[in-house]
Image (cartoon, rainbow, N blue to C red; front, side, top):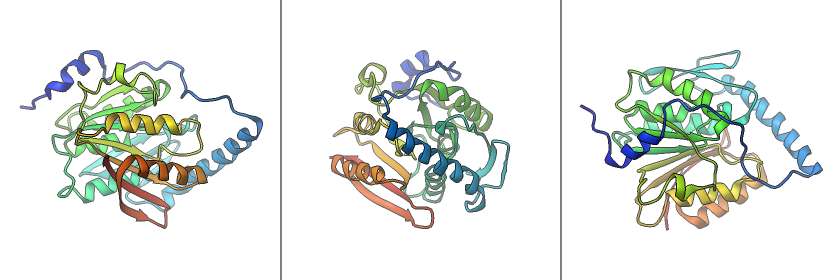
Amino acid sequence: MVLVPQQYLGFMERSSSVIQPVQQKHPGKPKEVDEKKEDGKLQKVMAGEAQDRRNIWEPSVYYALGKESFYFAGHGISIHESLDTYGALIWPGAIALCQFLENNQQQMSLMDKAVLEIGAGTGLLSIVASLLGAWVTATDLPDILSNLTFNLLRNTKGRCRYTPQVTSLCWGQDLERDFPYLSFHYDYVLAADVVYHHDCLEELLKTMRHFCRPGSRTTLLWANKIRFQSDLRFTESFKSSFNATLLTELPQHEVRIYKATAK
């Protein structure tokens, strides 16, 4: 018999496993003309990554028409991607963190742990965490949730100790209202490739601090491919905000995985 942690009963009452998305974007200042050029460069870079990734990463075994298959935690995983938004694509940081969690279960077991993923995107990382025995809450912007929910349900139903939950989270917005600190405690917060050229890096750091506070015993695992100078600047702010340790670095993919706790 699976016992549902008491702290999540209230959350389950207000959170549906299927959430209908509404159109909403991360808050941020209006983009200037020169920033549009940077966005164009980013789009080309990341679109190229999406096409090339299948040739360099294992255990990715199949890719066609926006659908990619993986094998983690003893299960085949089928992910539906969308080229319409960055949040509906799989990026290298997510794959790297999935591999790390699978390969280091003795040192960092997720079994029966409460896990929150911020910027869950396609849901690959949340799926793997669920398959490894975690009680997972996957979050992202409202317009990402439909595809996220679809991938989570198709890959975890009948396979996991706990049914993963899906809910909206806009970085830096209404955190205390939607996730009051006294009611929501997580053993792990996961974040993969959430740092790139966007206007919400301060809000992202605020969100990380909200869930990983002094005395919380929450461990934050952040994996990211380093692409731009803004990534390096965020890394310095991240190190200043937390007790951060570089767990592993994959130079061939320019991916770093950090473990952090509150100072």
